[in-house]
Figure: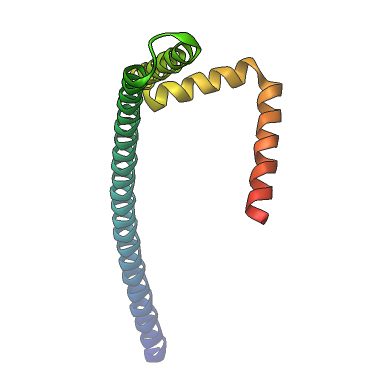
Length: 144
């Protein structure tokens, strides 16, 4: 009988230790899970901030390109002849540069992306053909 009591005591102690170890494992897993969630959240915030910053930088660069195009249009007007075929061509180039600059400054990259997606939706077959052509050209250039 004493042997049976000792076996039961050992069995109870083992079960208690196993239960305690199980609870500690659950606590540890919960703690690790919470920490991983916090790290993932922090990384997500950092990623969103980086993307947002890159987007702002790209929009600023687009605006600067627009300003440069306007300056170039002014230079073309200033240094081109006022009349004749060359003057008319220069005026047309300057007008195109100014309208492109206004478009860039007004729309930015997001507006350009929206316009491009609209063109692709209205003309899907030519868009696919252009994509195939560009892919072919890129493949040829990168293979050389």
